[in-house]
Length: 204
Image (cartoon, rainbow, N blue to C red; front, top):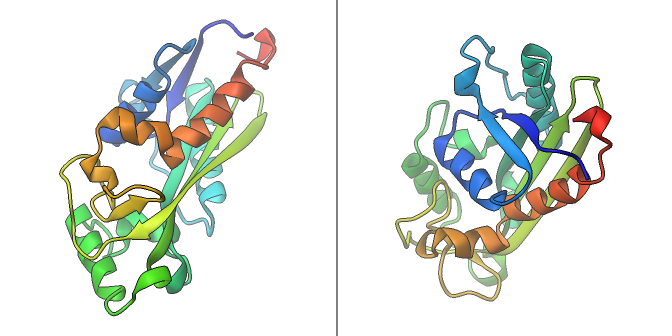
C-alpha cells in the first residue's frame, strides 16, 4: 500500500470538492485544491467525451504543480435526447448558465416524454495523472430517471430532477451520505481508491 499521498484536485467547484473529500474520508489521501496554486491556468473543456476532458485537465494541473492530479468530468445523459446534455451538462443553457437555467432547459427539452423515455444516467470519469506522465481513468455510472419537477434542496446541478433506480426520492432529497453511497462520483472514486493502494511508493 502507498503511504499518504498529496493529490491536487483540479476543480474550483467547492461542493464537488466537499463531496470527493467525504467519499475519501479515512483513506490515506490528502487533497490540495487549486486555491493553493493561484497561477494554475484554466483548461478549456473542449473534449467530446468525459474521459477526454478529465485527462486534459489532470495533465495540465499535474504539469503545472509537479504533483499527482485528479480531475473529473461528469454530467447527465438522457437517452431519449441522444445522451444530451452529456459533456455540456454544466453549460446546457449556455456559457455561464446557472443550475436553475440548466434544469429549466432540460425540463423543456423533455416536455411530453413519458415512461422509459425519461430514462437517464449520471456519468463521472476521473483521471489520475502522475508527474511522470503515468495516467489512469475510472468511470462510474448511476442509472435512473428524470422527474417532471424539481424536488429537494440538497446537492447541486440536476440532482433535484434525478431519481436513482429503486428510489422514490431525488438525489436532492437525500442526505449527503445517502447520495455518496450510490453516486456516479462515489463509484468512480471507489475504483480510484482500489488503484491507488496498488501503486508502488515510488509513484506517490
